[in-house]
Image 1 (cartoon, one colour):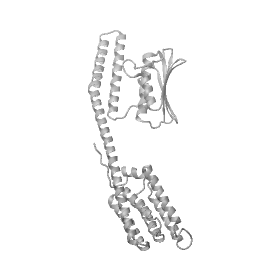
Image 2: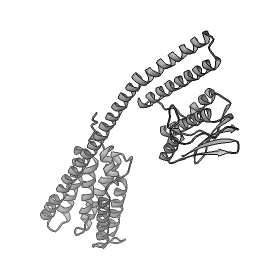
Image 3: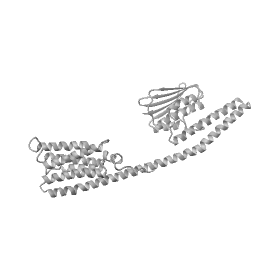
Length: 385
């Protein structure tokens, strides 16, 4: 999918170029404005309270006021920018009239460059044309050789306008190409995720669904035929695992399709579904979490509780989620006389173990610790805000 960006308004790629100009261009602009100012205050008549001095002061005030109104800034309306440019143009005309040998023609360059970059072609031509025409009138009145001064001004300023239009257009095209490539890559990634989701749904989810149905049938058959209670219990556990696996497969499919990932709100479900005494405690004020952080919290709790069931002769499990100012902390601690949970590689039958959870936490800038306690084992996940 290719997105075509408008060229008629300042916001967008042109706005980024205008509000965040390259450092060399910014430095050149500041240097040019400084040079114009220094020449203006050292050229006769100089700023003062006598003769034409007050007019020079007024021109400089208008010059800086216009720049302040039109200087590159975010959320600056076109009307305000045009007003600022016209004020700068007025300052250039005034100071050119008062100081014919000054450098206020540089202010006209400023107007032309900013207009060429910031506006659509029609507005840029109108603003630049008005200011150039007014400056030419001032030169005709005040310059020693009006014809040469006007010709030199036109010959030097118009190419700047054309060059800056070209620079802006090239920048727009480059940004459009970058965004088009990003959109294409995103579209390809979404298509691949959709394909994987369909494959998981058609193969894994269907297989687990059929397995769950078969195990449910086997459980009912074993119970009807008075099979050994341990056999019935084993089949029930297998059915429970198959059902959980099906739910996880559906969650994964939903995640691939861009739907909401499971997060802290599912911890209560994990605690309720846990085969044993599990207490969930939530403290602090919940704050917004990214999708990966939400998923890390859920997966860590799920993996830790699974390991407790498989490897620990626990008596009870405390599941605590704390929203702190600096981040979010999740602790899973089993208590009892059993062996500690394993923290190594993949756990048998699925998942990547707490090692995978530790890697997930580190990718998010957090940490995961797993260590024995005086009467059990504790797993703690920390994710920074």
